[in-house]
Length: 446
Ligand code: GLA
Image 1 (cartoon, protein in one colour):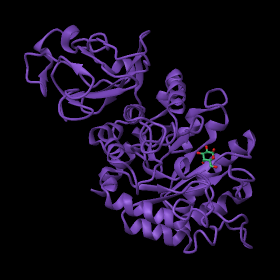
Image 2 (cartoon, protein in one colour):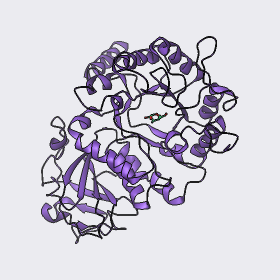
Image 3 (cartoon, rainbow, N blue to C red):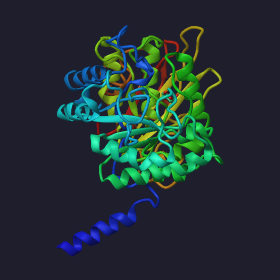
Image 4 (cartoon, rainbow, N blue to C red):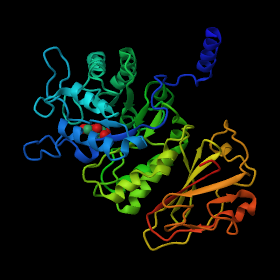
């Protein structure tokens, strides 16, 4: 019995892709909350006690995550970003939190978070200073800081790269991975390394990254604007041939935080960010004030279908499959159980536009194995069985809102038999709105 168990474990170990980071963490993209985009480096607790970077802010966000339905949906990490620490290490060379803003200490904060079924993330920087000017983690401090974080009960580390050289990064990022593993505490490891090296080969080696990091920032910081979202989307999909294969269970591209709930995005743009981050298999790290979030923003961030797609166990990042001259783009993410997610995105700024397509045009020919287009190695069977569809919002596939499909119109709309008609006519839809995104899930199991 014991022997066959061992043999099985060995067989499983051998079956793992060689070189993958095996701390066993982040098998699906991490979800949670992160302070930076919304709360920045506001350390003036005198003038702005409610919004400054202090333990109070994290206590309150932890309460919201635990009490307002977020945790049950998977939003479990509460991540401190820059500006939590004192300006100096202590006499023993250890990082310490700012004593007036974090009087209870990080261990107490971790205990508070854990007591609510959540996990705590912290921020460090592999340079002389953090980007905000706080003490960094130079090479000689890597081991000590990893041990400090583990002793505090930290569950995730974002290691930034300000004020460090390419050589220091090439040494320091793998060294921190080893140091974290050596603590024995499971700590999800987020590396900003590629973002400091332009995000692309030959300077960035995604094979090495996937071996040492659970997620990595590839590109510029998100700001609270639609322009910023679009620039990130452009960069990620322009470079999808490089980036898409790098992602998978345990190792993810990170296009940065969700800014839904803040000041820069309209309702439609907020839905777009959610759908595009979902199709990218991106970490879902919200950066918004959960104490005052509007019902509309909350509804988008708590969309169960989007979260289910984002967290699909296959962990295949989606791709842009169509980029029309009309400024309509279509994205496809293959999912487990022979399903796939489609996202339709309009960048038009003139007026509502009628976009018509079909499943055949979207590379879903009858009996085709659509995944072969995405990843030559995966074969999950033909797609000629039943096709069930669900909309991004409301019931049914696009049954509410600006995208109107005609899915085998003679059939009942919620559950469609794929063979009911010719695939070239199986999906015919059009948009009414601008700068909007609608997604649908195609598959027979959900
Ligand atoms: C960099 C990072 C941001 C944030 C700030 C903190 O700009 O990319 O995500 O962590 O530093 O100073």
